[in-house]
Each structure stands twice: as C-alpha cells, then as structure tokens.
Length: 201
Image (tube, rainbow, N blue to C red; front, side):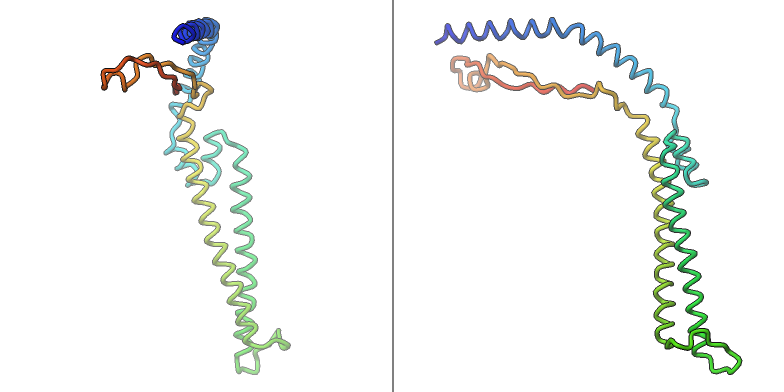
C-alpha cells in the first residue's frame, strides 16, 4: 500500500513541476500586463474626487464629464428635466384649482366662477392633490441632484482603484506531509490532501 502511495506522490509532484514549467511564459506575460496596468493606473492618480463633486454641485453633469463618463450626462439631465417639467405642470394646476376654489367660495357678485358645474369641495380636493404632486417633484429633483453629486464623487474614487485582470483567485491542490495530529500527539506523520487559495492583487 505504501509503495502505491509513493508512486502516486511521485507522479503528482512530476505533474505539478511540468505545469509550473509550462506556466513560466504565462507568468512573464502576466508581469508585462501588470506593468501596463500600473502605467494605466498612474494616469488616473491625479484624478480628484473632490473636484468631481464640486463640478457636479455647481453644474449637474459636469462631474460626470470630468470623470469622462459622458453617457451619464443625458441620464442626469433627463431625470432632473422630467421632474422639473412635472413640477411646473402640477404647480400650474394647483394654482388653477386653488384660484377656482377661492372664486367658488367668494361671496362677491363681481367674482366669476369658471367651474360652475363643480362643487367647492371637489375643487379643494383637486388643489390639494396637485400640491402634493408638486411637492413630490421637488423632493425627486433634490434627490436626483444629490445622486448626481454622489455618483460623480464615487466614480472619481473608483478610477483610482486597480480593477485590472490581475485581480484574481487561484485554487490549486496541495499535499501536507506532516499533519497537525502527528506533531501534537507524537504519532507517525500521515500525509493529508488539501486546497491552496492564492489571492493576487
């Protein structure tokens, strides 16, 4: 039994040595890629997240342009433009129904009621509804404006991180010839199989 195990161990070690010999050119190529990635990352080290945040605070979308994420600019202006449009739309209707309610409840004979077919309670309800929609659009506009600033700041931070292909996890089999039980209990060493995890960053 021991002879078969020794033969298996020798074959395994020879296989591993052949794999390492074949992976040597790949390791050289990996070193070249790492150097190129370092040169590419050095280009963005001067990129300031604070500047991107200030740009987007002053003019929405300018921080995205500073980060060279031009495709985000239409999203910024589209979202904020939509909320501003609906704010104006709901505000006009709110003022219209509010004025109609005032005219309806006014006892002066000179006041013209432009909605004679509707009750005052209905006009009041409509004005409250459109005021609620108007206020909601204010909140959404502020939210999109804040997201625009946060996005520019976080995106500028991420440009300084290494996200190249060299970030990897390698999993390989391993063989431990001296187990922990043999060291602590004084028994005969027994080989044990395992797995090695190698993080490269």
